[in-house]
Amino acid sequence: MNNGDYNEKVMDHFMNPRHVGEIDKPSGTGEVGNAACGDMMKIFLDIDENGIIKDAKFKTFGCGAAIATSSIATDLIIGKHIDEAREITNKAIVDALGGLPKQKLHCSVLAADAINAALDDYLGIERKEENEIICHCMGIDRKTIEHAVSHGAFTLEDVKEKTGAATGACGGERCIANIQKILDKYSEK
Amino acid sequence: MKVYFDNNATTPLIPEVKEQVINSLEYYGNASSKHDYGKTVRNQIEGTRSLIANYIKAEPGQIYFTSGASEANNLIIKSTTTCGAMCTSCNTGNQPHIITTAIEHPSVLNTCKCVEGNGAKVTYLKVDEKGMIDLEELKKSIRPETRLISILFANNEIGTIQKIKEIGQIAKDKNIPFHTDSVQVFGKEFIDVDELNIDFLTFSGHKFNALKGTGGLYMRKKGTVCPLIHGGHQEGMLRAGTENSVGIISMGAALNHHIQNIGRWKEIKKMRDSLEEYILKNIPHTYVNGNIDSRLDNTSNISFDFVEGEAILLRLNYYGIYVSTGSACNSDSLDPSHVLIALGKRIELAHSSVRFSLGIQNTWEEIEYAKPKIKEVIEKLRMLSPLYKN
Image (cartoon, rainbow over all chains, first blue to last red; front, side, top):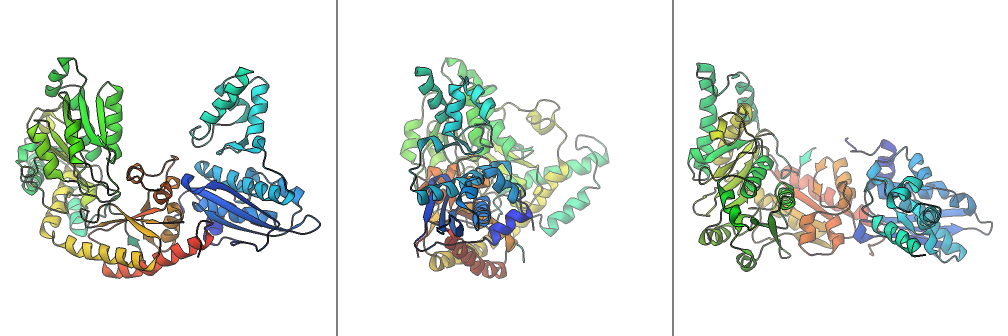
């Protein structure tokens, strides 16, 4: 079978996704993305009194990579302490899948973000604006970009070089306008 | 079982075409040579030219071969706005103007973008929710400096067929050349360029079971366009380069097959309708994209709400069923199909769209095999979807 750009492990998680569904009375839920953009994920967590993730389930609207990254993300966090789960980056998700096509990396960013959103929900943390993902292809958040801008990245090219934002598969189509807003905000100060 | 439902992308080489292609590999002569080897090839090329001319009720001298429809579309649009006989009228000081639609094939749309970059003006006609242009809007868009009206005969993604005869009449009344990209119609029904008032018509071999890399155009009046490729005297100086004789011969064999078997499309329409009816009846929240009253007989474009197109494509691929999707996730861009967006529906439905395009090789057995598999794939993916509530 021709899997296109997906490797066997990605195809396995897409064809046989683990932990599909919802959890009744979850400890925390995280919902990220939206259907108009083509992908949306919802993660449900069951966390015990010691902070251990006993169970995780997901529902995802999206392409093969969106489903595979959701599946492996739930696999990775089950049995882990919430602090360990926090450490799971989009790169860890990509590595666990043995790689993803470049234009699908944003799915791993979405999956990592979904875990964080569910943990925030559990901990009662209002999602902070600084944690908002600006560059979806490379998984760069607002905090990282603002830090770069406030430390000498005065142009879009500087931000690209310092943070890696806007250098992913979409070539900045998703995020350049938002990066520019941050640059404008700081140049006014 | 392998079920190929992607015939609007390309079609298989049918056995009799393959046989003729293999035989023609022996004829290596250059069609321009005057010896017998050359003449053998020349005769085969001219035979195809006559067959194509006859098929669209034109004269052989009005048919030109190119590397495909993309080249032919480029040729017509670029030469209309940059140089050649028509260009003398560009000297009026007004930039040349083209009218086309928002749902053209990229070989027309991106060529229009290119000539816009060179100063031409382009009007992209909107379409309604079925993909039809508004003829009144077309009339209103015509300007004194309009050099070309270029409107797709039938859309490759949704199958909508435009009112070509009426469009041709509007163009004729205003004395503006009318071009139609007929790629998806060519071989499926008889075309009469006079009755439809067509001045330029483009076609592609591999969309009607011939080889890739071959196609051409019909041009009503000689000398109304300038070549893209300059060089030798081939194709009446319009398209230099030694003819792709094997490709041209394959087109002749394929078109001949279609002319002999034109009734086959009625059967294919029945298969398409059966598949579509099954889907609409057995899978809720499904919507047909396109104009069911004016549509290609082989095409069914369906949005399966709550699930994403690439996921559907890959799961069907697992069962050996090959389709295409208008989802953004199927491409490197972030936007779903420009055609589905132009219909003005919810953007989610563009991400959820799947095109089933049948061909002459498809069988009822394949249709019956595909039906429950499609249902299963959609049901399983909906179980994964946070948008789907039972």
